[in-house]
Length: 492
Image (tube, rainbow, N blue to C red):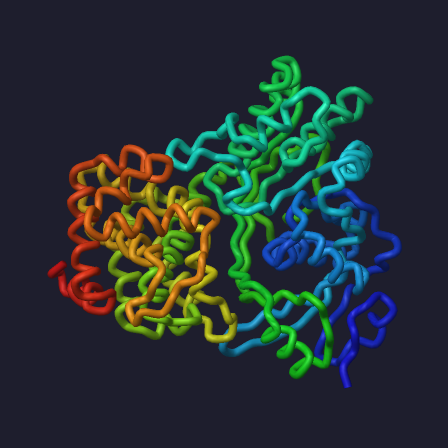
């Protein structure tokens, strides 16, 4: 017999499931969050739930928001269960389930007027974001906000109803300015280097297209703290729903499964106060950059490193990829020889220890993270997680054989078939373009590096161009398995 998740059933949760220790009816909204996906619900919402469980911060509850039609599906699932989420933590020796209740409302995605109205409410003191790397309108090659993107240009038109996150945020700030209300803080929780600066560039960049005075006002009055976030959180499938029902006796439309590890490092820079998250493990620091660079290069770059060879070998789960000696060996060699040497010192952190923790987390057999998820959206992820490392290696006159192989594996994956001949279904917003370019690169490797918006100067650097062409030719001639064997033997 299972219990269906809802507010009325919180008192009847199965014995192995913990629930909120606070009265949700007494919570007040203080944060409006764009992008209510799995990561947000396993990370920020859990920290807030911890805070509320400790008896404090009850005026910092979450209100969800979104701009895409597809987000209505998740909203409907959560509405059915009164905005509650079950979070299941698991690794090889541990599995626990808890119901979190930090979210108290979820505005209709795409309802710009309704969201702007809520943004104008002085009770909303923070607007947070998990809109993925692709949601920031960044030119991949330069890493700078792209004001010519059609969606941004449309939002800048006089009288336009904003459709982008930045357009809606800006409209909310205009209301606050016009009504004499203290502006809210805009807090990115996405895996992007200098995510606060990037968000600031987007909001101010859009404002500049509309009115220079507005751009200056936002620049002077709105805080955009940088932050580093970390918790491996795969997508939810029927597998996860089934495990929750079978092992815990709870039915949840959209549970979240994740690893026990979590980290949040945040600049203490807020316009109008913040919840006391330091009481539940958030690290507030003066400069997030060292932590951010470490995580993005070693963890996110590490994910990219194992993703494409595993995809080409038809490996389904990430922990299975780590059980393949060639994939695990590629990760260890590339990290230690080319990635970690580009990471500057991090306070109170030994980089080798951090890498070993990453290796252990990737190997977690319970998490159910898929190789396909790691392969997703390379056109947005590679310019953030891999290509800056290549640029630093080239600048220092150091070798790039392993990074070139990683790039060649991505190119080979985008060709659209695995080494066994199985079809790889589209796995990137730019899949058609990537596949066409990968096909051209089979005979002319430089075609791949000519994607200026992705590779920029790196794609013209002779040392990298030659290493990439060699790696791709070897891959096509011998396959991923034999190519990794050669690389690990120092014979690529």
